[in-house]
Amino acid sequence: MTTDDRELVISDLHVVPIGQPDREILAGIDLVVRKGEVHAIMGRNGSGKTTLAYALMGHPAYQVTHGQAMWKGLDVLKLSPDKRARLGLFLAFQYPTAIPGLSVASFLRTALNARRRGLTGGDSDFDPSDPTRGGISMGDFRRLIREKMALLRLDDAFAARYVNEGFSGGEKKRLEMLQMAILQPEFAVLDETDSGLDIDALRIVAEGVNAQLSPDLGILLITHYQRLLNYITPDFVHVLAAGRIVASGGRDLALRLEQEGYGPILREAGLPASASDEAEPAEPAEESEVHA
Image: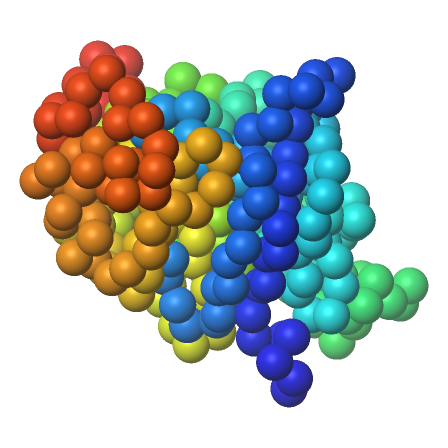
C-alpha cells in the first residue's frame, strides 16, 4: 500500500460560496491527516470549519477556487460527492436532514451497498443481495444493524423509523454514528458532532466514535468547544481563523483554548483578537436538541 492510500493531503485549499467570488472563506488550508489519526479542528463561529467539511465532501453551495485534496492518488475535489463516498470518505453533518418515508434500515442498506459497490470498483456484476457478488444478504444486514445499534444504545424499533423525522438532537447524532459504524469509512469528517447535545447524549456519541477508532480510519473532528475532546482524545489539534490554520499542537492546545480563549492565539498569529479575549463561555443548551 502506498503512502497515498494512508493519508489525505490537503494543499493550499481556497473556497468561496457559490456566486460570491470575492468572499473567500478558506484562504489556503494545508493539512495532512493519516489513517489511525484523530485531528481536531477548532475555531470561533465563522472561522471556516464547516466550510472545510463541506468542501471536502463536495457540497454544492461552495466552490473550490484553488488547491487540492489528494486521497488514494486522486484529487477528491474533482470527484462527485457519491464517488468520494465510494472511496471511503464520510461526513457527519452538523444539522442532519429529515427524509420522510425512508426508514433508517432501508437508508443504511442502500448506503452500504453503494459503499460495497465502490469497494468492488463499481463492478457491473455487483448484486446488492448476493454476498458472492459483493452484496450483503438481508439476514446478515439485520444482524449487522442490530449489533451496531446496540453499541449506540438504540433499540430495534429505531431501524423502522423514518430518517431523522421527529428525532431528538441526540438521536440524529447517533444515527450519523450508526451510519459510520455500518459503512466503515476510511476517512470521516465529523462536523460539530457535539452541537446541541447534553452530557449524556455526548457520552453516548463519543463512545460510538471511540469504538470505531482503528489504524484504518482517519478522523477530522470539527468542534467549537473543548468539551468533546474530554471524551475523544485527538492526536493533533489545529486552530482555524481567517480561513487558514494559525496554530497546531496536541491536546494541550485545546486545554489552552479552554483556559485563555482564542484571543491570545489569534494575536500570536498576527490577527485581531476580536471583541473579547476571555475564555469561551460554556455552550448554551438548545431545548429541542439536548435529549439522548
